[in-house]
Image (cartoon, rainbow, N blue to C red; front, side, top):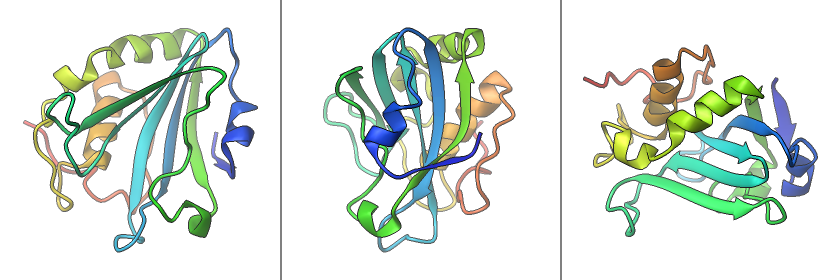
Length: 159
């Protein structure tokens, strides 16, 4: 599934309240890195929504670069990234998992801020960065999701 999403309201039409779903999102990064991609993961665990991503600044709560935002079903998570969301007009869902596969991914993502080996480090290029994180999740679970060519850092090797 590759689908452009122009608003949170449009995204919520894809969400099934009593289901397990995992959405892999990507959008362009805001200035000055507008040529690069930023991916993140949104999970739906029967109405409990989580947005999971790595950002270029530390999360004061965890002390690392992994950010987890949680909301209930009635308060959708933002589907855009950065301050230039209106300028870039959309984010893309590059893959959607539902049912048992989604439940397995959600289980893996529990406490991901403690599991991710590069949680304490962020480098724009060559990585580790947000692309490295999402690619690590994909590779760890053998999901076969392809990030776009401008996902700089996806090839960064984690030891």
